Length: 145
Image (cartoon, one colour):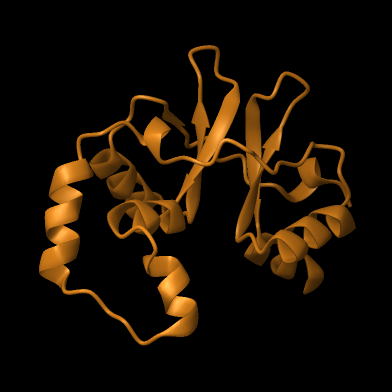
C-alpha cells in the first residue's frame, strides 16, 4: 500500500517566525508530536517537535534523562519558557527533514519510522510541499485490517 492511500491529509504546519509559545499551543491542540516548518513558498524547511522544545528549555536535559534521575523544577522550566517563548521556532527547529513521498510503500514508511525513532513523518510532493502525514498509529491501524 502506498502512503497516499492511508496518510492523514492534515496540513497543519508553522512558519519560520512562529513563536515557541504558539507552537506549544498548536502541538497541544492538534495532538501531534511535531509540526513541519514551511517557508514563504510553502516548502517544508524544517521540523519542530516536543523534544526540540524540551531541548530549548533545558539544553542537555534530554541527554541527562538517558543517564541520571535529574528532574528540574517546574519553576525553572517556566522561567526558561518565559525567556524563549517569544522567539521564532526557526532558532530551535531541526533543518534536516526526514520525509516520505506519496508513492512510498507502507514498508518503507515503517522502516523509516522505526529506524529513525520517529512518531510521525511528513509526506511531501516533488516540490517539498506538505501533502500529508503518517503516524506510527496509522501504520498499526492499517495492519489490523
